[in-house]
Length: 98
Image (tube, rainbow, N blue to C red; front, side):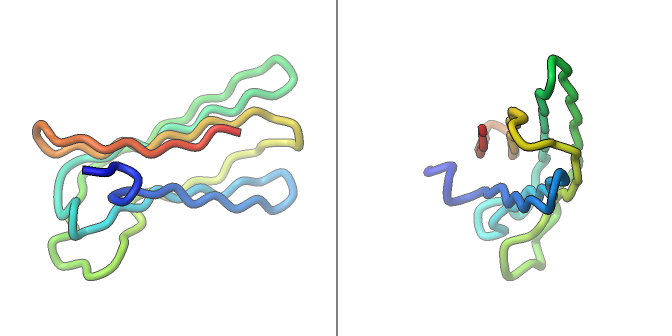
């Protein structure tokens, strides 16, 4: 399975605020679990946040937002975002680093 097609990370910057969404394709991930992890490095400091939960998209017909978060990330900050989807032995990972 091509992990890039079954999950997606959407990131929008408005000034120093990043809005991040972890998205799954319900055709591939109708159920399971997810973890969205965000790491921001700026001026020698590191901030890490993580959200997770169950996926229940059995009735969804289009890509579903599993998690949405906002973080402060000034220009020049290093940002690493990872979305992991799991269902039994299946796993998909999407990531953005910038």
